[in-house]
Length: 172
Image 1 (cartoon, helix red, strand yellow):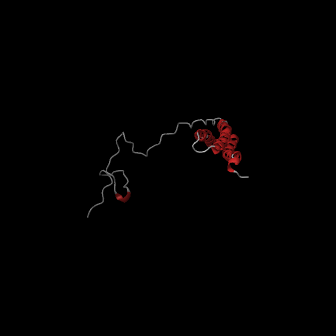
Image 2 (tube, one colour):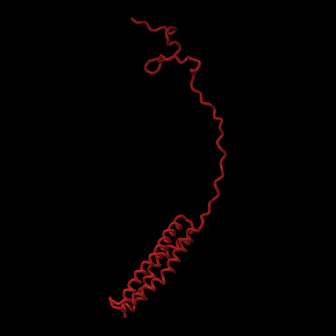
């Protein structure tokens, strides 16, 4: 029969067996390796002092004002072009297809229609800037007015065009 090991002899002296009765064979008794529980250093660092919040940045209404300005300029430029388009249509109606005046009026109408792209583009840019201004609170009221004006302006200009061309349409 085997005898129980002598607790005074062997490499396991002074150690507790780990789970399952297994005792590790590593000897950590070297002076560079402390044998006790690992000590955490005391926290000596103080938390940073609270910084004051940054000053509240007031949003500038410049974006909304620019949007409103662009839409207003687009309406002002577009209105005479609408009248010029209707008078050119009246001129085209007076001449027959082969006349030089007809060709000149026909070329003029295409030029006027192409020129109408400029205020239409300005109005579209004004609409987009108005939406951005209203959404980001950078000139909310001018931005909303620019949105409303840019939506209503094409409808009003179409009605102006139809009224000015009424003689050509012969609605009476």
